[in-house]
Length: 224
Image (cartoon, rainbow, N blue to C red):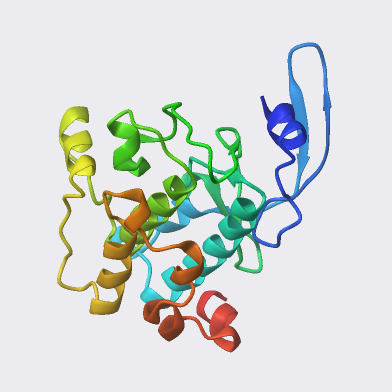
């Protein structure tokens, strides 16, 4: 599967925020990849924080880098389909890198995919409703991730699988008081039920919240 993902679909791995594959080899049953080393997993970093959440500066730093990498993928007609903290790595220098393209797919913008995949908590409404989807799948997942790293929990978490699906289908979530107005506006712009109404990734980079919290000269001072 990994061989097919990285070679047949030509997953772009030279972007600074995508884990690079240097090569691979295989036997009759397995494929072994030689990948760029990354220092930490975002999920573990998040769990180590007080209240399991990041500051807005740190969250914006990661979201900006993630968005730039996804724009690069989407420009090459790659949908990742499994953006979540466990699939995002942090280098020793503090930069974010997308990893694990095992569920990714090559699809042109005009093609609608109907295969259900991904992790439920990060799936958009069109997936849990068994409808077709496109690159806006990843946009929704970025919104879920942003909520999670600012709040310390998932936006649609519920006691049962079906209740979680219902909350996702209706974009039913609440903001704690500490989430600022600009952050709320951005998350709300990403977590829209109708795919065509979601903020584009390019417009995400122009959002006031991103501009306020990401000044290039401060990036690594936040993390190091």
